[in-house]
Length: 344
Image 1 (cartoon, rainbow, N blue to C red):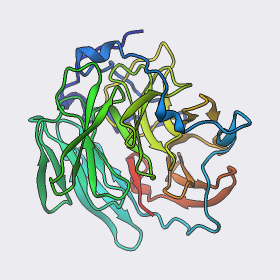
Image 2 (cartoon, rainbow, N blue to C red):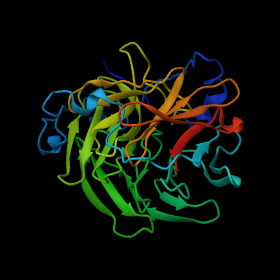
Image 3 (tube, rainbow, N blue to C red):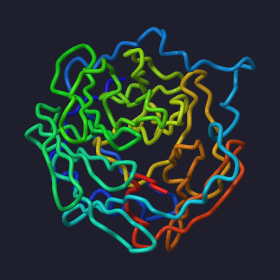
């Protein structure tokens, strides 16, 4: 199935969130699909190679039987520090800290290509002229030029230590070159190529990045060590990658049915998360009741599931066996806002 459409105008994107979380059924409004460059219309299935060092365990299921990866004993409970974005006037993106409330760190610009740093202090965004910016709400700096612009799904992504940003330059190659630059604008370098150009996620081990294709035809995992990209098993169609497990093996993704539209490429305010073991293709259970609207892996391997509520949403924290460790109420103001990062 071919999913091709030009990126929507910025004003067509604004206001998408007004009804996304309006009912407990979470009826997500999806628009037409997105094609980035002609070469991405028929992505090639890469042969698994050295990147599949992320192999299955002897029993063939391994970690796929659990919700998260290995965790340390008695992890520190979450405090509720997180980064949210609000669609509407100015499209503000803010860090929330229970001790001092909301602090604006930036805005979603017309290109709709942005991401928050894992430490929750800065934003990276791409403007329609292809410039990659880094800012903290009061200051900003252009750290790279010539980035793909106008395709909302081609978001930059921060390294897990919040020191580097990965992005895609304008290219018409068979698969897109992936660039990494230091947050101060130094050290720009090409690290490889991948078909997974949309909504990149970077694993806590610093080695793996994953994204879905511009045509929604699957998810690809890129290995920073080997410079190779492999198509994830078990995912035929997807239009959002939210998070990777610390070892890069399991991915939190929004999968699509063959009949579903591809979406407009913008970051979703809410979606029904699916976790897939990218090596075996098996789905990983999420043992949390209620309407799940996103999920994130923490750096220590815990899984945080966001559950829709009538007055506020709840963050449910699971350990490696899927056992509940904690429940944390989000601020009521963020119920209809997108969750970009869970800081601590």
